[in-house]
Length: 595
Image (cartoon, rainbow, N blue to C red):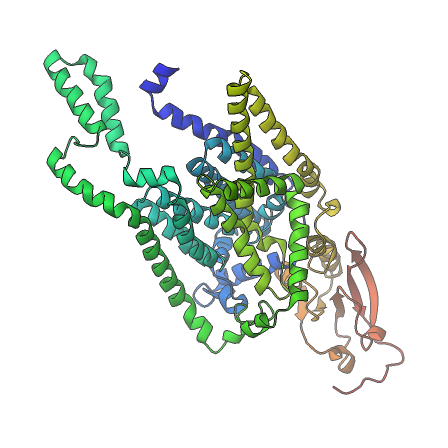
């Protein structure tokens, strides 16, 4: 094996990626089966409608998501690209999220490998694949998967720049932040955290030593390896020259193309500038990112329709004045929701491991810099969002910052295992099997509570024991898609012979966009009606065609005498339902107040 390592150095690089290659089938098995088991929910219908309108008129609707919902346009553009992947557009949209989760897995592994060990990267990737929070949102057509991918890419390149400043890493960081800004505004947190990564990691002893004494590049390593392989086949005179040349290459005093004196002259400058290069790269990338984002969104924020953007809508975020008033009840509610999500989706063992990693960073400050970086990346953005969020606070908002928490747990297992291996060898004379067995036990204890919930999410989503707000949004409440397909089939049957007129409740609790998108296939059979007035049909009733009314709540009492229930489609809990009413003219019209 030693000869193989010496002869084929790329073999060991391939060994490091073998773990990820083994995890790919597991990831696909956890994401692809029954991808459509959970019906569409309200936000997915919104994004699909934006993509459809963009496809109909790309020039006019280029920034439709930013204009109507305050969100960057890249996700909607990607949905339009994936629209025709399958017969059902929702399948293509969810497949796009699955791909985003796969990209996130790659960067999680790379982060663990670069800052600690490939074993830690493997464990963190395994946790990401099995964590119910990630399983749930990687299977939905929402921003979370690609937010996570952009955030983990930014974290990886930030760590790479801090440990070994290179222009290529700066280019990768700029691409990650730029794409993240065009996915969702949470990339602003990454822009603020990247300088902190460099500041923390520069204080780690091994990184500091490496920055003072830069390591040979891949070209020099390859040249040295080539010399060592070929030197035995050279004549004696040439062999001596080759050995001397290889020594010079190894000592970084010469290369095949540069003279010793020239390299020596620039070495001093490189050593002095190495410490500042990472900060310089990050400053340039951050400045350009903010400039591009400002150029893209400043016209929207200052235009005549700026009040309609969610980023300026006070229903989404507290104003500065409200924050200074310290709304403790609201903050307590947001914290309680977040704590419930952590307990439900992360479980107690993983949280204890993450806390142990944080404790290691505090107690061993000379070696716990990587853990401190992950704590900042996992906690600070969530705290900021809890402070700012008014009423729109859902678990998918913390999903992009979940991978650092999983990395912390993986780091804790790795360090505990290494410590037990060392102690068992030095003090007891045992092999390292004790530490390995202990690490495996911790992994099994961590993932065991996830198995049941993962199975429910994939195979029986209606029975999944999700957090309270998630279960309301995805399964039980009006945003849930349960009953939509059944009600659509009923409407198709009603419209099979004669045209019908459909009115959809305007109380903002019925996913009307889904109906309008689906029933557009039945042009000539189905006609849509929309109004904000509750007495629109009672004042001007006409029986020219069959008219139906769809709602998820009890109709207004002014409408009730005119509505005859046709069929109801309850949600799994029975607390909410989609009901189709037939509009009829009552024998005795009630008196209608003038509005």
